[in-house]
Length: 568
Ligand code: HC1
Image: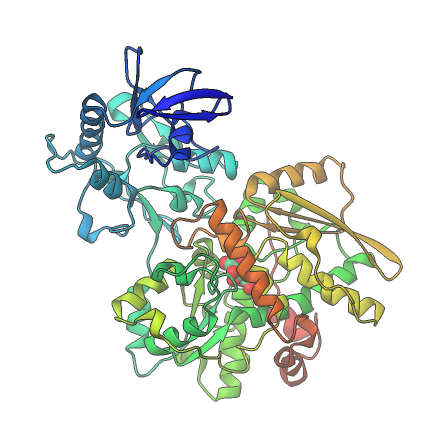
């Protein structure tokens, strides 16, 4: 331990602790901008500078370790003067048209400017010569709002190992973007949106579809249906002041009805359906028909990753479409027929914690209903903006139920939203199909939680089924390397692109950090425990769908509507 004095208060901390952390321990919050614990510790923005007695220059507290006997001042006139100057320089280079900015009122630059007390900016506002990049279906990059903190660069490199965006040029000319100033769509970007979650300003954000959805809702000729992904209900409340992880399913449904959606359905329904199809596919492959390990295919960022980085492994992917796309295909076929509505008049909207889902919905192969199966994808954040635009008081909403039949689901469908959830849901069903016996312990704790790669061996009938689960692309890549090098003999693998799974998706409320992810995960499992039905094959609406329409899992209709193929 070392002893340090910060603003005349003594504190003992482990050797190697930064001044920033030591100050936090005694209740002093030093402002930061570029700092992202364990991901971006570079001391670049110099907003967190402090004065260390005896040192010639000010020190960036986020990267300076404390020394025994050190005396630090965090609010001396010299410190305050330097912080103001540094921030004014950043602001001079920033498009501060706050009222029209997507991050207005949830912007770290704004917060820090307030905390530091910026009242005037002594430098003329410089205009960026780089235009907005709107080349992908999912993301917008606005260099005029970028403060060069490099958090996006670090997350893309370290957490996702994709390296789609890097610092370009040098000194005053530095800009962040894809190599050679390419458009994002021509880069290796997998459109996961993890960069959006860490951007302190409005330099990276989802491509909004709010106006498209408002106009569909306002069109009396259209029947507008909506599906909500599993991970929305444990996060949407955060946008309205609730604690992270609070389960707000009933209010979410009520809000969507108030917005004017004709039917409020649940992606959890098609998550259950996915288990029926993917579970059957797994059993088929286990019997020698198809490649093992089988890899899950519901996370579109992961699909973009494997298509770009491991094209030789595509035959391992499950042919199942994601639950979002299964829902889209059924909304304009099964549901349209059942409700007697011309599919041409159906507008299918999904609320997703993910930005890559916007890209997925626009893939040319996702039109098996004869129309674009999912018309518009809104992130959790966009839905919150719509609720605010409509003046709806979220906390005063009653709890309402989803519409039947596409809103009926089980706990197994719900846990799709958590890393390990698809695997756990599959095991609950596969075990009972193979053995014909009831599974006594349905909680597969081995595949839950935030460790990077989780493994389990499960006795199913006469076989030991070896499974692995990875979330976040760095973990997925490590798992893929193990498989391609022949060092692993798994049968079934779940991969989710975002850390924590969909609860940590790039479309979720900001902040989404480790602590928030843990709470949302807890919310998912709390929701699962509270459900009457917790196994996908018990879903009565899914059973009815097979009886009335699909026939059997992997049957001809399923093949046409619910499955896809991948070409390198
Ligand atoms: Fe997901 Fe999925 S779980 S991919 O994470 O399989 O986005 O929540 O909707 O499609 O069900 C996301 C979440 C989501 C699909 C399901």
